[in-house]
Length: 308
Image 1 (spheres, rainbow, N blue to C red):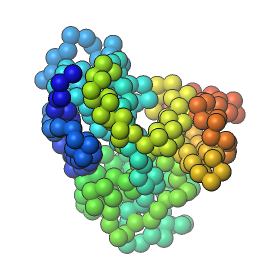
Image 2: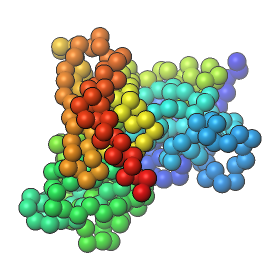
Image 3: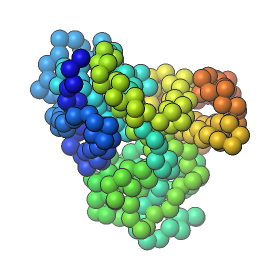
Image 4: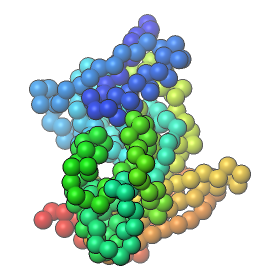
């Protein structure tokens, strides 16, 4: 096939643009031609098939999925933790970039002593909310949505004591303030800190280009975490955390997984170290252990409570 310009689709938030330009530079350094295409919302895009037939579900990825299927862009770059575990029909995972900081952090107003006093913490994540309640049951958690810039501004504009962010997102666009605490006790979202590039499964030129950006260690660790999520979730959004780390010296994988009730009162954890050879089913088997030890009942409760 003749050389082509790879069109990189992106939303227009500062973080989304940073991610798109990062991939663009990597491709340019390899000698590929690229262009950045800002994609508008899907409201004015007409498809001849309903979205559910194409398997399009992700609230953060839907617009770019549709643009790719329509042929308006060749690739899309996402924060991997925002991408549904099942990709739409025709779209495939083409590269996982080397992972950045996996931690959640608490950005606060100058007082980090949250121990016993009633405090108000902001987050739009059920996972963060549940883990916060589990540690600080006397606190209030308020909803916080929007891109990272919007959420940082809302924290400044309100009388909350702090808000929880993914460290990687703030670090990438130099928004990480001085007033923060690393929440190393909070298990991150599956694939947090990793960037995923997707493309169409029949676009061999683009797939070959992107394969050169893939970081195998990150790909394996995020695969396990997302397999854990998919096995537990069954299409439901639940407070689930997972983190896999690779020990190069011992050639082992360390897996941490957690499922919590929405109020944080119930917490089912798994913590294990296995040989690297067990990676393909590690997420699945870990999820099965959780399900067999009360997780099935807890997931049912979560699904019922989210319907209300």
